[in-house]
Image 1 (tube, rainbow over the protein chains, first blue to last red):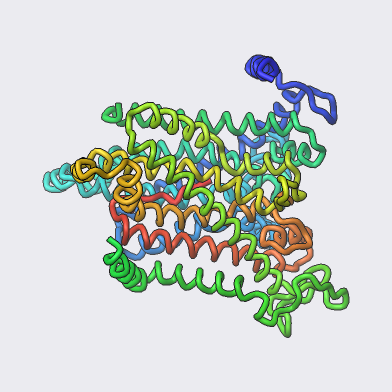
Image 2 (image 1 turned 90 degrees about the vertical axis):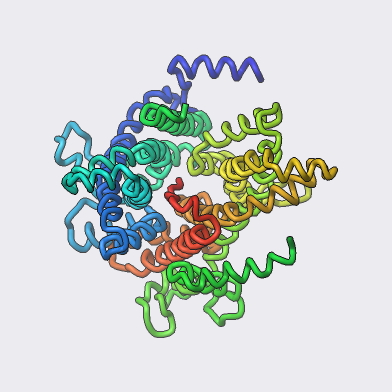
Length: 251
Length: 303
């Protein structure tokens, strides 16, 4: 057993994941095809989630207690609670089937043009991002409220600095947890992306994994789990590093 | 201590009832737990009885939420399908709590010593496992059929409960560890030791009560996460197996009808999952504001 493990570890680290039970083809080949698709979905989602979530959080914090803040708070509770795969189904029923605005699923490779590729990704990426928009806006709001209540903000206000400038200064100090959680969210999103891919029939790693489970192709299952876990650990590590760079006090 | 508890409970209760979001969450939870528990006596249709003459009926008449592709009543399948969701959500937390508390207390109490290092390193390994993908993989490898463990038959639902419960241990252990590490070095603990109290007594009767508030909050939010994970697993066919009803499984079947206009098949089960999770989240947030105001900057980020 130990020798087997060491042999497997050595091979895996040198990039050889072994062969599939079912197809006999190297696993690396299949993952090289499906991994970039999942990666694109996650990168688009998280980029969108960070942009919208941070803006929403700042607006909420600046207008704390007023109507936009109340609406944003309600939205964030709903957003963290609604299961992505259900949201995806509902969006397909209404926006794709009834209105015909978006394709109901599938994937268009980049080789057929950047625009068609992105167009097919709009619904799945939005679906995956909702949870993270909601949680990042909540985090940004509370972090900004902390920053805005600091003495230097009062001083800046007394000195007559413009409002946008004050908000920018406060955000610089509020950004650390937001950046860290965004990195962690990236790792989590990789797991949930597999469910969203299933809803939209995107041929990413979820297809590799679910096919492998159906066909009892254990090396394939192992490889997908290995890749997702590696992404998860690396994104957690990045969050840690970013935190330490932004906030030297943590050392 | 014990004489204060009822009064504290009453205070918390009043605070929740006065908090509109919290009481709304509590109301949702009471409604959903109530109907799921009372499912056998509510006079619903049999969730498994098929009626091919009445298939794909739109909501209305005697089927309030319509019927599915083999004529089963959607409402009664939702009520029965909520049961595995709640079982997994609550069950996983009940498994994670005692293990997490024991590890966190022990490590935090002996902060900086060998036990602490070993336990917390082990927790770190467990925490580096992304929950959803491991749940998929483990169920995928073990298979969805019940497995025999000695004299017991472990159903797929129980496998998922145990699996999620174990993966909840790190977040619970870290929470307890943080509190125990601070309390363990406080003056009153030193005083208790002078009185001759044993380590175990101090841990259980002095330090543990200090962890309860954040634990209750965390547990509520983890139940919400468990409900989502169970629904996701059933959705991809690795959770509760048909014909037994489950909310995720109903959504999986509804996928076949998104092009033909039977909107009720996908709408209602998902709405109930969302409401359940919203209920737990609102209730948990309200509890946090009341019990644990220092941590009220929670993100709700999970999974």
